[in-house]
Each structure stands twice: as structure tokens, then as C-alpha cells.
Length: 204
Image 1: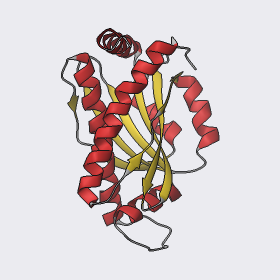
Image 2: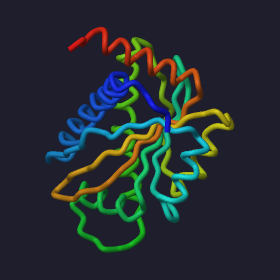
Image 3: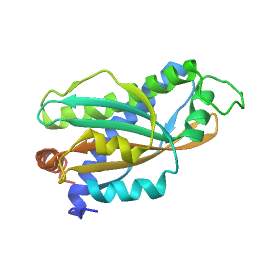
Image 4: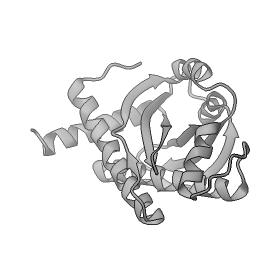
């Protein structure tokens, strides 16, 4: 894990917290019920460290929404749920009490929409803080091992993964999700600049 100045870490967390708050509001309006998303836990890890961590943390396939983006820096944004928890989430959103163990096409579309809302909200928050435009590709849904997808996102051995952990609460369903940003080194500098802007604008 890369150690950051605590003030910079707090500012970067706030960038993503703004995006998560926007996502919660949109999701709540969409399903006409409160969706609570916790303040994200934030850390930056080197790509090779993350690959080792992912193999330990995620056993087998996970439900992943992947969205490529470009702008002042390029990369991939991923929303990751363990397969079982993705079922809990989409069935809560769809008010579906089914106990079937495989995800249906309707549920896949619902999870894709959730990913689209959350990832776009985070990327929009980043763009606002940077004062620059970020262009998003259409998201895609994948069932795969997270380590394999992250490895596929970049060939840069010095790349980094920004790891956010958030907790979803819909109809009293607590579901643990992860947002990953797979970035190259210039992106880390851009994030630091965004953090510095927040610090300058909100010195308290």
C-alpha cells in the first residue's frame, strides 16, 4: 500500500465520497426507496500487490461492471461484488425474493445500471475536482476473477489500483461492494493535484 499524507488521503476520500453521495441519491430516486452507501474506505496499492490481495480476498468468480474512461488520464473503473452479494443487491433493488443461485438477464441488466450510476457519479466528481472533462465508455458486465480483470486492464507493471470499499443498504440488505480504479503513474499525480485543490478551497 502507498502511504499518503493524511490530509491528502482525507481530501481524496472526500472526492469519492461526493460521488458516492450523488450515486445514492440517484439510486434512491430510481427505486423510490432510500439507498444508503457508507463513506468509502480508501487506499492506493500497486498493481502487483493488488493481484496478490485479490486472489486471497475473492475466491472464484465475482460480478463486475467495467467502464473505461479517458481525459486528463485514462484508466478503467470497476465495481466488484462477490457473486452471492451481487444477487442480494439486485434482488433487493428489484424486490425479488427468489433464492435461485444464478443471476438472470434482468438482474444482470439491473446490476449493470447500478454500476453505471455509481461509476459515473465517481468519475463526474473526479472531473469536477480536476476541472477537466472525463469521457466514459459504455459499461460492460463481466463475471470473472477480479485479479484477472485488473491484470487485463493495464500492462503497466508500475500501475496502481485505487481501492474503495463501500457498504450498500437497501431494504435492510447489507452488501459489501468494491470500486476499483486501475491507473498509470500520471493519474496518481492528477489525483494528488485534485486533492490539493480541495485542501486550498476548504482549508478547515
